[in-house]
Length: 98
Figure 1 (cartoon, rainbow, N blue to C red):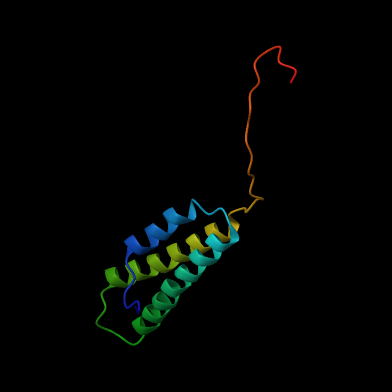
Figure 2 (figure 1 turned 90 degrees about the vertical axis):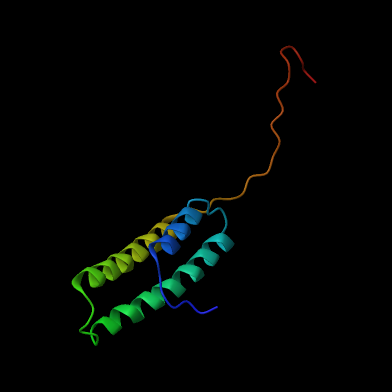
């Protein structure tokens, strides 16, 4: 499926998913997904230079989406990935010495 247009909703969903990054695989997947959107946004911004029929409002909206995508990128890259901890917490009753 080729992405033809990027919407605010698409970027917001990636941002929400970025809150739950716990592994490098999660981070890689989100960055891959985000870069597809960034490529489309860059192409749309480049096309603005050649299209004189685009209103200032549409141009500003597209530039804001581009800035927001870069903020999301920085957020994902800044997420710490710590070692996974697996374990079981057992609470013994008082006086139990096992």
